[in-house]
Amino acid sequence: EWVCFNMRPVSIVEDEGLQNILSFLGYPGETGAPMRKTINKKIEEAKQKCLEKLKATFERLRGQFFSKYMSCTMDGWTSQAKEAFITVTLHFIDEYWDLCSCPLGVKFWPDKHDAKGLANGAVALLLESDATTQDIYAATHDSCRAQVNCVEEMGLKGQRCADHSGDLAVTDAITGLP
Image (tube, rainbow, N blue to C red):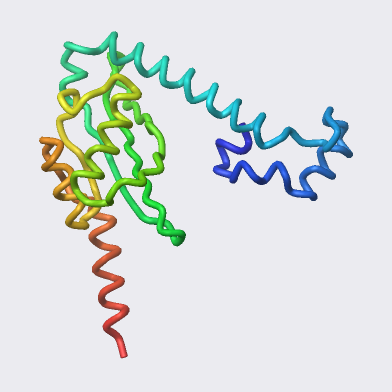
């Protein structure tokens, strides 16, 4: 849980300091910390449990007023290592009028990082949760042309993220200073 909730890299379990602390505390095992493979397995199991719960929620809400107005936020980026990623988070109000936000995941996306590639990646994340573009009313995204075109490619109403637009304006202003 600590690795997931605090967004630590899985490789942290190989950190010598963490292993020493866990050994001192009497954590079972030769190294004092679970192996990376064990952590990855537990994360995947937790993801599957969450997806099953989300699928059951969608099944329960599908066809009701609530399911007609789901929205999503999405983002795509390229790492410093030139690897592309996409993420989608669904937002909806359930039958108890609770606002629910469900991150569907961050997906490595080796395809081209253009509108069609981003749309394919976003749809792949949606399908893992049994959601489709027909379930989504609108999407909030950053202001880059690929994201704008991605939302159009998916047939969704789009809204550019105000924070991202503000960040771009400030960055432009700062880089233009002498």
